[in-house]
Image (cartoon, protein in one colour):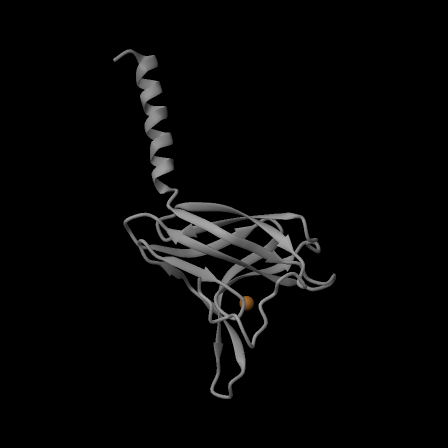
Length: 157
Ligand SMILES: [Cu+2]
């Protein structure tokens, strides 16, 4: 093989292997704008695993905050909703995992500045193999089509 051809085929296989990792498809992504002075906010989205293997997301990071964590919302024995940090989130092959109000969410902690509606937040989610998935979240007003606690959170689709 001529060196140039070899280089081209190496580049092609690198691009191809990157592409084969792109098996998490995001939809309905949003980050909630919070009033000035609030240190934390939350990101929501649906992630569809179009690949043939389960994906275990173990970390999240964004440039707009000091850290980001996977959280769940659960009811305690007094019926009070509480957030808990989750070590990972598992997205089964062929299934869609929904981060939504009142359920799982990506907690954005230690905001470096207030986020305004219309801005975008870039976030990288990393799985247990070290594969990174990059997504862009539009910042939306806390007033905008916020599903309330007493209805619509049973609608999964
Ligand atoms: Cu939280």
